[in-house]
Length: 279
Image (cartoon, rainbow, N blue to C red; front, side, top):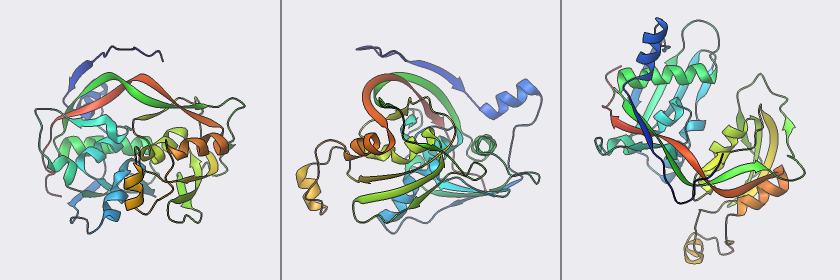
């Protein structure tokens, strides 16, 4: 996709309820859960709880017809519309801080006996957000600095998944301190980007063109984006490296490159929402 240097383009369309629009066009009811519980989660007692919710987009769990997920309203919106967290913002008309501070647990059951796909679950979450949170939003596209994940010369070092019938999972393989070792199973490149994006100081976009799921391992040194030597010393990481260490690991171990670019990025801007109605 071509970059537009020095120029920002913005498009905005008001959408009251995607689920309602789809239902009106097709004459069919919007996809929805058979039953759903939305509960306010007690405030986290430690940073561990906050971190657990930070990547809510990768925390949808499907077990038979049972679906669980959680996070702030903005995180749940990212989950429902298959967006990264940075792609969900609040408009000036909606300045309520609870949307980014209050955590919610969602437990639901899909209708019927068939196991729903992630796409179907996202559609049901969209309906839940419209009905229970009274969500309204606009869509906006802005050219912004990003990183693109692309295939490196020589091709990717990835194996097609042997677990195509299973949900994507990640498994720790002996991480210690800031040295992270993770096994990825049946992971698409979009899911992979969602799991590692917090290592970067700007949006990370999947531009590999690779489809399907893959099985692979990745070992890298965790380091917050833009970490200074003083901050690293305070956190007990005296040997912090300049730049973003995970970039070299991705190149060497996966055959992929992370390159800076400017791209049109779509975002969803919340213009109205209410705390969820009772279960």
